[in-house]
Image (cartoon, rainbow, N blue to C red):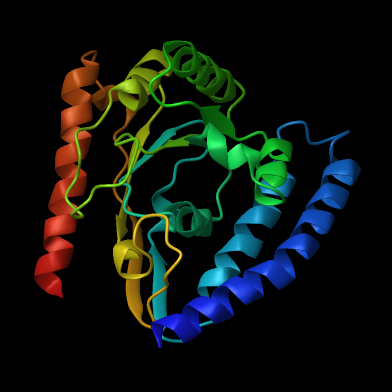
Length: 243
């Protein structure tokens, strides 16, 4: 069953992604004069990509508490389990720019759309790239655009949280915007790390936790980082206990 589901998924993706690219480029051409932040293109990409998680009725994928997302600029912080995470967070149907490794921007079709949507690239382990990423995120926050960051930087080999980098907390404190923990559960049961094998069945939950408001941020990015990590860790533990 895993081989069958995997084959169907990738065939579906191969058949439909060129159409998504064509539609995305056309939308970019039409909306660029009045939508420099690519909000409309992002909205299209959110809805198109999230539908890839809907074709298999045995994939139980739900997004909870979108209403907690604040209006205006914010730093969204999500844990990282597999390559499916970015597709799942697109289900927030909320404007944001996500930070992604630079190699994804070099992919045909997918990478082209990521460039057109002005998502933020970073090369791991390169100080100049990290500095550029932080500057890009500050720029988006100043324009009123939320940014989404995976502070672990990579996948955990066992599903437990890795140490969090402090950049997301530093951004929220520096820009004085809310920091929103976003809990991802179950994507390791959908696809392990970079795949390609897909599971016939899975239960995935994306939960927006209560935002940490500006008045609660404090001035210590290390303390704020640890606070967010504990919130997400507690959410993972609670989810595991309820299954």
